[in-house]
Length: 210
Image (cartoon, rainbow, N blue to C red; front, side):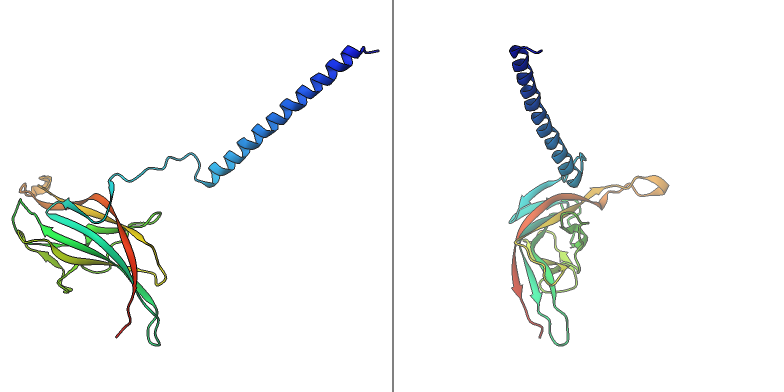
């Protein structure tokens, strides 16, 4: 027959085991919850950031043979009519200056030098040529003149809205070809590489078709 001391010791041991069992169950529960969170947020995979700086507009950047100012943007909506569906476009205001110290010549600023950066998607190219002086002929920027006011346009969905967009700016480099297969060694403006991503404040406007 067990003594009173043995019974007391057994009760104490049972309580200790029960207390630790509860702690282990809590710990296991936390591990399970963390595993579920990690699984649904992309696992342990490293999320790599962009390799260029992100800056806020208004800002002016040196980009190869051009100086590019980015000031503001607007989403322009056109309501649905009896004859046409609703539509919208994103217009970003630019100030372009030719700073080509290598060739000192006028040059067309191509729309390929800009991208609309949308998280989780491929960067979007402009829908049309960059427009200056209200012309669709493209932006020919004369060397040595002051910055010229221009605009770049991107297509977007009729209901799209945001108070800020990100515009990627690229540049060309002045360098020679590789020299292979008889290629000239004379340097020229070529290639495209990222300079920066500009966060641009955005407003929404409505226009009607004439």
